[in-house]
Length: 148
Image (tube, rainbow, N blue to C red; front, side, top):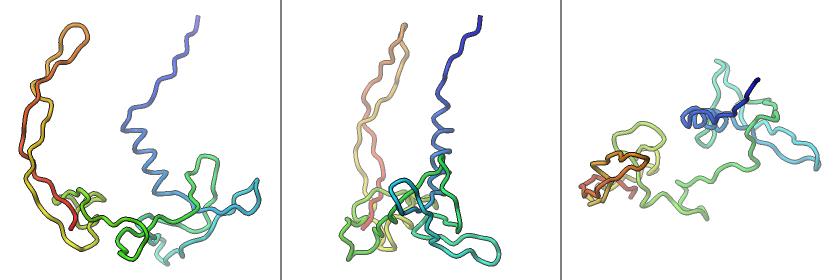
């Protein structure tokens, strides 16, 4: 007798796959109701690298396959103060990071503020048979950084 069981992949693997699809997303436009036409939105450099366009890597002549992540409009520029979209003022950022969550990246060069805040968190968690986890509430002081 055979038994099949479908199991969800690890959350980290799913996140990595979604991030990869986001980085390689293809811009499309509807030409007719039943087809998608790919827009070539950047030029490939001579050395084979791709230019960054609005924070995401873009390549030319990509096909939008049935597994591809596609988009129809570019993301707004949140650093543009004249935009109709809200800016990043007040947004939480990470001062010690060089990634996409960094204050350098998120605050658009306008700087950031540092503040000490009191937060309540779960602590001293214990497993109780069966099947419960009980925690206490502890107060901690955290340093938070927000875009100016």
